[in-house]
Image 1 (cartoon, rainbow over the protein chains, first blue to last red):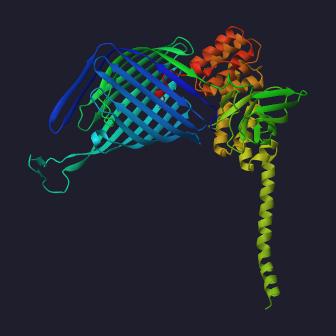
Image 2 (image 1 turned 30 degrees about the vertical axis):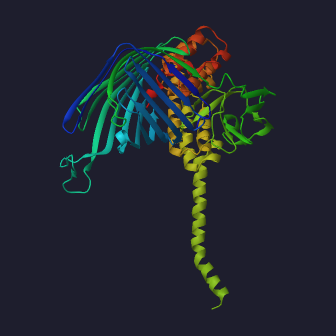
Image 3 (image 1 turned 180 degrees about the horizontal axis):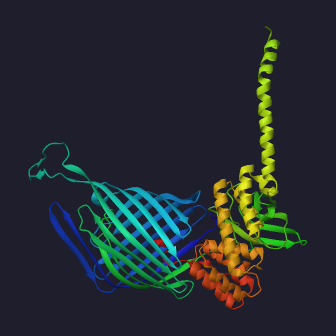
Length: 378
Length: 198
């Protein structure tokens, strides 16, 4: 059920930001403040590293934007997710760490635990996720929760997704009836001058993605509303044009909303850049994962290369889908004899009585039951 | 009354009940055997009688439509081996039956069972039947199993379906050897903004 292949993808983007603007409107204690940053041409560097050893997935994304003569804004997000399948549902769960700093803002970080479920039903996808976390902006304790529900449909190369995101922040503010005197602090009623505060921020968004043979276009258009903020729209539009297997030209424009958890201002930017990707799919770099020697029209000997196990079983169309123990040959090689006329067969293998997986290094397809199955040519 | 006399009395009282149960069991088994007549023996051996009969009805439907039945039997056995509930196996078989029919309509009645099965899997990923016709025309009399298998493999690895299909068709246009389909790298075919996938 779980794909055991390793995938490492490193994306380095060096977009040149043509124009950027950051602005925020905040209110506190009845005082309104507008912050705005503008700058001329500036540079960004972004990285996206993914590693999928079996059911685990590690993702690290980060970016730094240098504002000429002003400073830089930086963001880092890392996920360590455990992925699995339950019936037809894909389940992901794990910790998330986020870090951000702005030109005039100190560095802030947040930890959260995230769990999500997704399911594909033909052309349709549905999913939901939830997270609970903690942050310490301005030495204050802030807990937050994220809830998300999404549904999408794929029609040819077009994928449309509707999404609802709710962010709940819980912190504290000074009570309205607290007055400070230079000589002493006076509080009226209660022991603490602070009162707890809970705020809700809602994003209703529509995502549109078109993936053709030649290019990708992705857009997100959203409406944000919530407590103590002015309702606003935000959007992100990106066009990606592959110029080779490893390089992609990217043009993007975005009006990003503020991040209440990490206390980051909203921003607006237009980017033209080049994204480079390096990946290890495994198939080309690994030696042959299967050796087939046909002894007669119906008898065939197959050697599977399955490193890392002491025992292996196989079941597939050539065994009538009954598990068959393979003979260990050493160095991760296992052999079996099968009565099978020439043709293509669906097959799964199990290492050390583990889950049934598609054998690595050979074509695989969805098995119709929520898992993957290998295609073996005998 | 001795223990032996008590035991004898209990056996006499229980005898009619046990006899009735035994007769009922035999009658049930006889009914099962009647219902299982003509059902594929592999299904009979792997599934409870009622499930085997339901699944075999779909196999019979395929036979009556002139479609290959072996892929359906094997798919049922696969589901059974993987512990999939009977209802989901039946649903999967129904979908496969429908896809086999659409694949046969697109590719023609003389298509091999292997090509039909792989084409049916491709249709289940959302591929349009006209694409099968396009590939059939490009490949001529050669099997479609390898290019369609490569396409399915790429999609399963996360490639954009349209992009994967174009790569496969490009190779078919160039009359490429089968091994070239197996060497297509999925990395260049995935969507360019993976962070937006959720």
